Length: 300
Length: 225
Image (tube, rainbow over the protein chains, first blue to last red):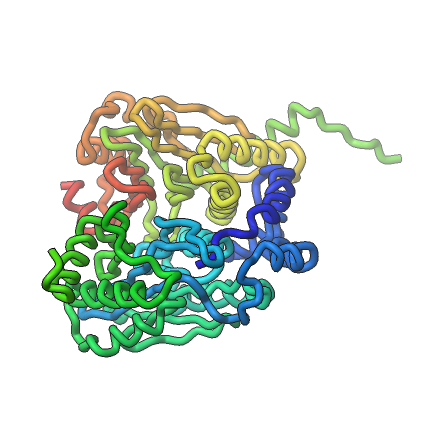
């Protein structure tokens, strides 16, 4: 996961934002954005499109210059492992904590798994700055829709929204700033957990059992593939996610493993009929401790 | 020759105020009251889907009486204002006072400059970090803002209802007691309101981040017993 290399650029657009005065946002019926928050931002002059076009024209060369990984082909997420596994009661999603800038570690405790709303979670791989911004916009969008309309979007509707955001980010992805989210949630109508993966163009694919993304995804995927069984309990799904992250960190320099010295562990969360719940760091640590004693019985 | 006809500004304002008051008085009333765990909002509303009470932001709620399409437009504008502000700055920076001012400016402007004033009376409530910091801003059709202390009554029979509730509500009342005080004040001595005819919401301190919730069946019937 790349660190936010865009901050010097986006500063400018923040100045532009604060120049706007805050009045009651009322629109004539032909301009009304309805429950669309991103559309609203465009109309009141805080548009996200502005940001990306600005970066495209002025920021293109600078972005490349700042980026030590600017030569990476587009669409290849780097430096993260995100895993999601369906279980009997819902879905479990987990992500490591490392952010890298080239070969150096930029952050040891960054979080890449977020609640999108009460019944869904979103995890991110790719350039950290735009990815976290995308999550923030997505969270606001879901809540905005819910408040304006008085009811939540369907899980598929939420996934499509996220797909549109990834698609509008495509120009930046071509410059090596790809953002690849993973979306998982509990479908209250079907009463089951569902996982959606995305590609760099905003293509949205539903996964039936599990999905992994990020640079460590290959090892993680193999681990899950070998251990996955349908109808897992939450505990079993957590154990498998932890094992997958451990194997990914073992083989991928850009994925952080359990940090026993600083007590930093991956973020693990579940979404089921009771909503999103993140597990405490102690719980995750206990899982790692039992996993390590299982794999290496001779170490204490 | 026709005389250019003149109407005194006092008369114009009086006519508009009368017009707006009439429109508001046609609808049913609403009470917002501070109780032990936050702020309770109770409206007489036979519809289950056309709401008078709504969430605006984490700690901010909206209530409106009068013409539905007009206060609903204000409600949506309030959500937009709050979400844009929270997204641009921070979630903590969204507060009821600034929203109430924006509403007041708009209502005042419509009242003085447009042909027809808005036939609405609205309320912006904010749950404070401590009980003393709870806020109830009542905004009338002409843009007047009133910072209410313990409760606010909106709608046609506001004075009668306010008189009834002032004797029965205390800021330390538990939910059940506060709700029955509000319902009794709304229905008066001659009527009996059932849970079907009520819309109830609360900014509830026991929740996390998003403090607004609707009190729905079967909880509502249980509380009304």
